[in-house]
Length: 314
Image 1: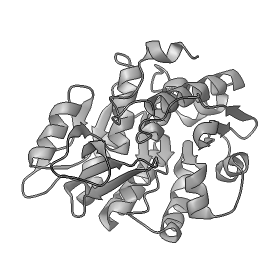
Image 2: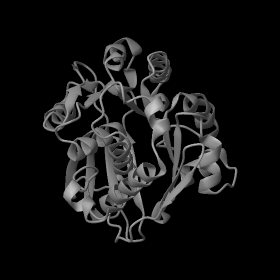
Image 3: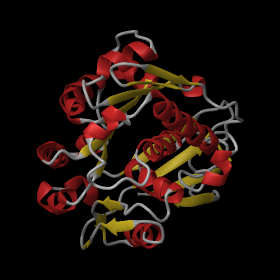
Image 4: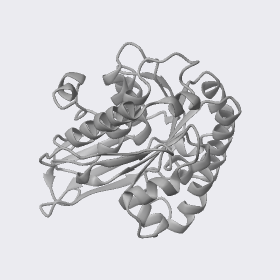
């Protein structure tokens, strides 16, 4: 979607100055990962767009960085969002995507793309958009399971889309399909309400052999559990300008650390199971650096650090 990021404080003002940016959890991860691995990975973003100004802008901008498999559909609209910043430190994002082209995704369109994928990244946003999106999501997950494709699942809970009780029912069904599962501690508490620590949630969500679960802890960093070892990395101490997009940057850094430049035969769940503690620490450290540094600038993907910047902290 196209995001209008306010360059002023306070509620949305149509006359105010905005930074127009292409944003969205899944596309953010794709663009950020491409920035970290510009040559060795073949990255595709799969969706649908309305044939309108916003849809054309998204195609134009994303195509400069990744492969875009998202047709422009006549008569459909593209979702947009508005990000506003307040003097008390709040950053509030509102959406206009009801009935968008993306909300009408179906599995027939997705299937051919999944068949060729080594890793599929999905979030909890897609199944919340519509019944057809939820059906398409589960069909895609079944396809990944049948062909042993690595699935990275980021909860990305949006209270504007669904209530915690409804989200929990769907996510409880999605999590077992994941090879790499990521959730924020605040999200876990909002949805499951079990008053657990990050480490306890990491154990709760772990799906057994050949999987990892990651719980982010805000400024305190993140924990990762692979069934044997609990790995923890502290966050960087940074001045937070705009935290929106930090989670997507975190996932891109995590994937870069876990699956760098591997062939199809290596990019499977068994490979994840074989990663040693040093490698897990490295991946989590990289993820924390990406997430933390993204908070220091405005823009979902324009704020993503380069490998040169990341290496200063590794």
